[in-house]
Image 1 (cartoon, rainbow, N blue to C red):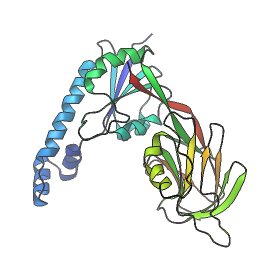
Image 2 (cartoon, rainbow, N blue to C red):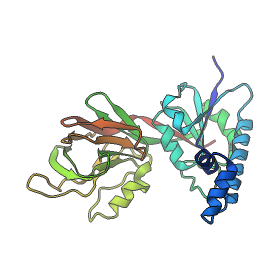
Image 3 (cartoon, rainbow, N blue to C red):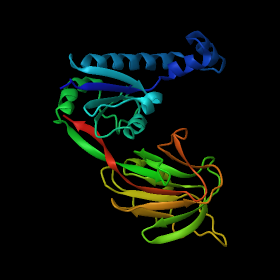
Image 4 (cartoon, rainbow, N blue to C red):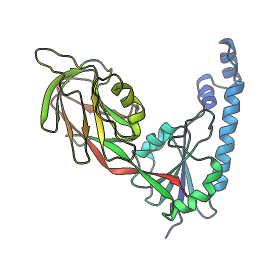
Length: 298
């Protein structure tokens, strides 16, 4: 039996983005100075992040295999069933990695507690040494988070931790037929989102707060979803009666596209990773079978 593998997931720092854009650190410094800004704070955050990454590497038990993967490479990474995933970064990075996993435990490490909320990256790096062996041995406390799944009738499939968006890629008016729990309506809107309990604190909540009678938002661990239609337009052929609702673990929301071009489905705000939906194609949205297994304690 092979040894466990720790897979450390991260994304480039602000400094790395600036250097990639301007060519060198000094050119980045000059560009910021010309705008009345200082690179010093960005450099300090970069150094703090490097210290956390070094500490995380040192916390991985000797004898374990290890890999490091950047956010942009997640779609190409080959996961092992026995991996323990260590996410170091913002809460959103956990959402980015969740859709690629199949039950591997995830430990979220907050590299900058003064600036990052830490809802999904709840631990400091000092906790990692104790958490890794417990997670590998299935002895860590796990909280399972529901994922939402969208599947197009041509076989395209996408999962997300927070929400999926269905509509036109530019968010302009989209026409479709919507069906939920025996109700059906032809609509024209700027698209709709289907959110999980994890996503209920973000985009879904901002929409729900504007509604007179919004659908109830699920809790993070609930096997439930909520959907919201954005800016539905009433006309002779389109209605506004079916603009929000709750979906249980066995419910399916079905959308039939009437878009000739530009129809998309994307998850967790990553518009570049999208499914294409043409006229007459059906999208079915439900709770995904897979769930995020988030480590919440030792």
